[in-house]
Image (cartoon, rainbow, N blue to C red; front, side):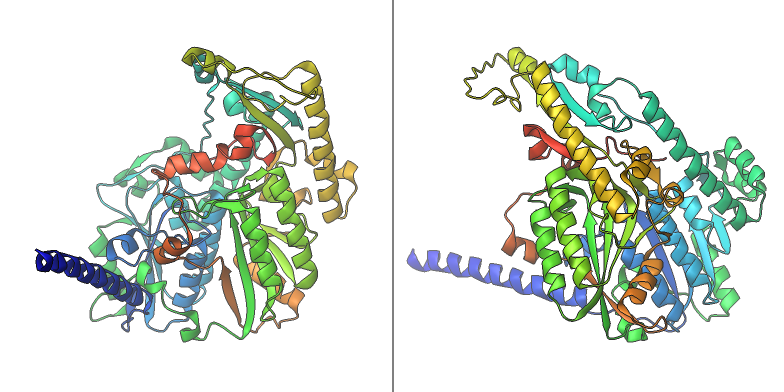
Length: 573
């Protein structure tokens, strides 16, 4: 019997040891640069949400095939493809994009840069919508499947309101806000758009639509009026899209590859997948120099602590982020820093902590702020260091305002048969209780505090923009601007993306314009082993639920807190 049990134990240990060995073999193979044959075509798949920070790396083929590619990795692949003699052409295949317009503008800008290499850039669309079509129009030849469908019909904004639902279950959301456009979480307190929200949404739609029409018109060599007329006639069957001049031809995927092969006079079609090509080190192509520039990503809602658990990476923890900034500030090898902000804001105190550390970093090293899809409210607050700010025309910017919010669950408790008794010492001891509504004195006190925070926010921005508070006030009031509008209003310094940010930080660091630099990403891509050794939080069960929780269900919100945060999520579809 003992021998039998010993055999079982030894067998289990050997199985576990084999699993560990195989894990590290996969890990090593996953990090080894792939072989790129000569005369290859890079198949650039642009899909999903396009994160800024690298997601967790799981070194298994199934996971690697579905792992999201970051904005920086797309930028890096296109500059490598332009310089790599083994890559003769790029076939762009965008599909299922769920990202904002600023990130699309970055990818499109990178595609335009690639075309300067003289190498062919083709695009083939599968089930394309407006996002995919906008990106694909950067290609010199654009194809659609013969029986496919072009869902190119314009833009819309949909805002969801939950007040009636919350009323039914007995949940009341209490808010004090500063700024007429800072209409707080209207999602929870209203049943329809406020006039201010409608004004901002129409402004964002108009500007985004204008940019879309102009970009498509220039790419397809049509008049803007013709593009507007085409949009009004959409969506289109493949034949209709071809007749309108929206695509160059109707071909299957293999026919497109054959056309590229014939154009380049290649003996055979050699494809390189983007998931493989992104692992080619840029230094192997002579694209990196000795000077190091840190690219620090601040992506997600801003909180005081937490956010590093598996499945919950999309948070900017003040505790972790300030520690990272201090590490970079003390690294003598780093000559300059680009902070890449993609955040709708969040906890007010956490935003202030990050702002302070960003300001200290800017005194020690050349610093440039690069804004992605959103740098609003607390996301804009942390950027107000006085250092150069770069944004895309489609970046959601500003929302300079503050609100306080808490949940009153009294009626819900009554429905569930739950009662509480409150004993207090101090007039405002129950001001943040989830069992008591706000009284007139409590509302007045919170309103005064929110106004103080708001004035501090405006003053901070005014100082960083070297303007008077009275000049910033009309641009504040919680209003969300697009990057193009923010540039006109002086809330940012430059329109552009990663290339412009690198150009500016090189100027500040005294690095010659022609000198190559090494871009070092922070935080680096983590493996599942890093998480397993350093984290104990559980994975979020669903990506959409996780995103909702990251935005709204922070501890500060549940307990009552002051927020520098966009009052709603904006997705132009």
